[in-house]
Image (cartoon, rainbow, N blue to C red; front, side, top):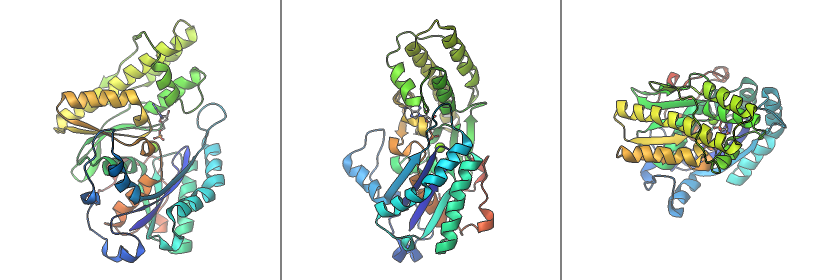
Length: 364
Ligand code: AMP
Ligand code: MG
């Protein structure tokens, strides 16, 4: 089965083609309910992966193209992001087919991010996907963006049944599979981790997205400042931490580097504590880190330490699949298409607040 995925929940417009082990159109008739593709994979744990292991995956991702909206100043402006997506959509789509070396007629289905996300951005992907589906008579699948992050992480790292720490610009959740659905066991009580990093970055005069530069500055930090630390059960909160850090900086009595170091240490310790609690309660020894903030070296290190101390293992999504990308949407489309009937066009309205536990899992 060969699926075109379209991603447009926030800052990125992406298009990607993925193919499962059964191959494309010619083989498609026999591919329903055939189970996961992971049987053909060698195990791949941790952040290091060998070339041989990677090439197995690379065959499945026939292409993954994207173009990211970068605001001139400040954070993401929803209308400007949507304009960016409209302007880039045709090029990104055409490049994805060209890179995959296929024509649109050789696709078996099309999948798009139906939510959650920013409505103006989501609309662009939905319109592009519906238009292509109608014009080329392709089955269409609206997929949950969060499940896309989780399932591409499971595919790329071969973890079976992990506790997932999903940390991105718009969401921060501790998720795990239980009773036929991905349940949210803990989450941010206010803003997402990536959003907090980006807002602190703005105060520090760092352009969007701020995560990578905060990480760089933190490496030069020397003094660990005391900041607020809020974990309630498996939930956590970042707005107090953010306000406190912003005030400290504006008062002018701290070094940027020390503030970045302290901010990261507090934020990531909260995330790791909540995740560890979920692992203990759920009796799981594997943890999967995914989402844009998963690119952070310090968070990766802290999660690996925690998992190691419990006798477990941390699985880290490869960085090219950590931030928003369309391969994860194409892959989630394949998961649905192998087990479900396509959506009706009338059932493809965007769902900007769509939660992962609302989706009945049919593919595992
Ligand atoms: P996503 O929404 O999944 O595409 O993730 C985007 C978020 O990831 C933004 O808030 C970025 O600041 C954040 N991010 C990207 N790279 C890093 C990094 N190295 N460390 C921390 N956060 C990062
Ligand atoms: Mg995302």
